[in-house]
Image (tube, rainbow over all chains, first blue to last red; front, side):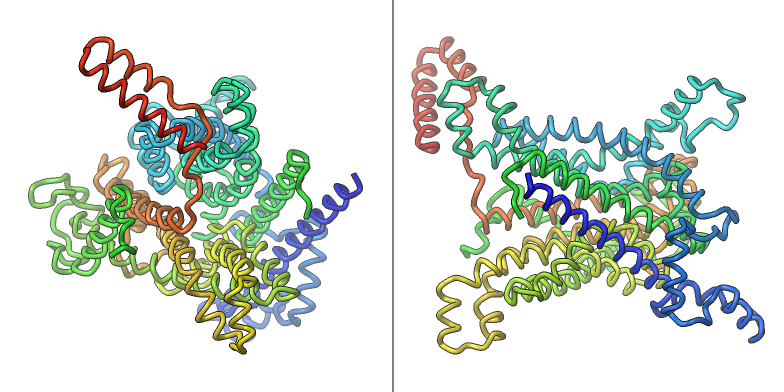
Length: 321
Length: 318
């Protein structure tokens, strides 16, 4: 028990340090790197030296890096991420809305991918070396290798008439009831979630297959079989249970790639989430938004990894580090 | 040629064939492409015809020619970014594994950080700040794809470091540099090759993603940029599937080929997972037995085969 608490504390410390590193790196990326974003601000075309000086002063760029860093940390501690250049709203407000739109869409796709991926992987491992296995492996690998933006475009091309081609809600729906609104959002969510699911599915299926092959070669599976247990029981209670350990870790680790894929998928489907916020921040040079979105994404991924570490500790009591 | 025996596995042979073909296309693209780069040869989004088998794109350029020219960019980015990642990953991994102590903990904390940070958004941020160019893309992808390599080489180095021949070399007075370059690195090669192939795949993916967001090199043709053009210049509403389907399939083919080769080399270097403890497949056995009931001569034959199969399975498992 005591050791468990020690591990939890240690993981918490690591997570907090990582978040602090992310915050500091974010500062460095946007300010200190040559050709940095904020100094570009002062490069207004045809501006006089006095105007540039005024701009630099207004943004606090004439102060030392240390002072700027402390100011940055202080504002961040108050939840101030700056104001978006694009719409003048606080970045934190924009990002809160965007994150609220992204999470349900990604969650739906991820759940579908986990269920389908584990089923496919288990089937492939149990039927190892057969035609079924080869077909499943090749198709998972192919789905895994297709670029998310391309899958999105293809689905839009094939199903664009059936499903809405973009956005989160039907703008022409006047004063919809909560039920109508939910159905409308789900209907818009179908294609983007499907793409999220497809891009994750291949990864999960391949990973489950490998993990299952590993546990199926363990001695306790031989013991289970010697006891006369059915294949289904061996697979469900002995092999898959233990294979779930690496699978659950890698699902958490793959969150990083989900978040990356979301930028592409939300761009294709004009889904007003955090990925699209990054895209439009890049195209309109909205640096406060870009910086804020990147910070929020990093924190989300760190937190997910932390939670998965804790779940792993709970699942596998053998862990001692 | 025993070191090329793995080519006999059909999947790996096909994968190697795909990569070799892409390499040839990349080398001879200027000769193969029927129309010059950037030249308008017909109507916007002209449909596939005998003169232009894959149709025309948003600027009336021949899609097939663009596809052939794009191969070069994709391979250059994939190989160069992978090289950057391999160099950083090996340096970090070998140094951490060989030196141990505080060097190891510092390097591994850094690796952990890069492992956690969402790679694509990070690449987008850096590429957006640096501005679009081929060398920036390569550097950005390479700088963010080395973590896996570092972890693998570190683990392998740590286990090799305590082997007898390394201890003996050290006892004979070899310098650290000599031990690392002459005795460690050769043993890391299969691992590095396998992982480098996988890194090429992720690099090609990343290039396509960055190009799709308008952060690719604006002066060179690439498959990712072809998809971006099709998207941003409304190939969808024009119904021009030929403008985006072929580059996507090409990316998938090269990525699958790299993954298959990477997996194949990894399996040869690490020959586990060759057996399981599940009962022999019943469905198959029953089918063979049923087939035997119909035909007498075939029955005895398949019965013999069945017994041999079962015996082989039992031997394999024991």
